[in-house]
Figure 1: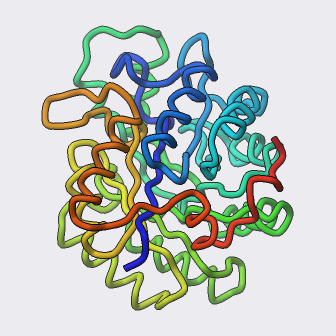
Figure 2: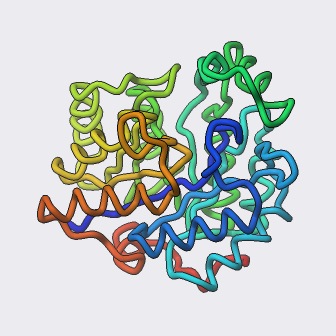
Figure 3: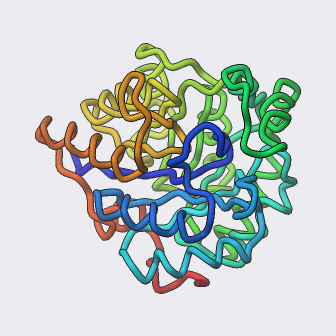
Length: 308
């Protein structure tokens, strides 16, 4: 078993400010949270931007450039910029910041899917900002778009154009087959960093048998040509990442994926979640990968070749 890469997703586009006071909103908060997560043991930092006045997800490259250089100057972590963006953004909007930043890594959803986070609106009666409730409720009719054409175009622009590699986000079994098709057609090339995702309404459920089936399917489709990682939404986060570590995989935590640190207890920070999964994995005699080791495992271009 190789060392375990810990990724941390700092803020995302799912949770809204009313859900947690710990959720980073401003560029300064995002930078600080990222640096703290790296210091706690995260080798990869996955990043979205938000409007600092309202906390709403934003594709604005200028906002990304307010925190990307700060993080880079303060730690050695791999900075992974989203191409998923926010739930109402076009593909062009989602690519705007990555094209400017030219990062070592971008996330890439491996298919279109129903992406329903509307149950989050049922759990609150008060909101900090007017956009939040409607943003959640309308996802009952939301389809996140990433067609085969979109995927090929994103890989062409970011991968072949800027040397960026990808965190291939697979929310269901079909996404693994989509990725296998792209590999067969020469659209993507190994090693593939595959993030299998559990517990999002519209994707595969967070059940242990599903975790094992996704791993078995990936093994069958990709053999030794991939690096496996796991994230699970909400209360499943720590249990599933622990299972992944035991099974020889890598892990992702962070406030994008869960706002909690334990049952009924809100997380104080991204770093707290990183520290917890690191402690669990090390107590299982697993070693944690450094950013340099993660770069070598994933064949990344290096932090000196980015656009920030």
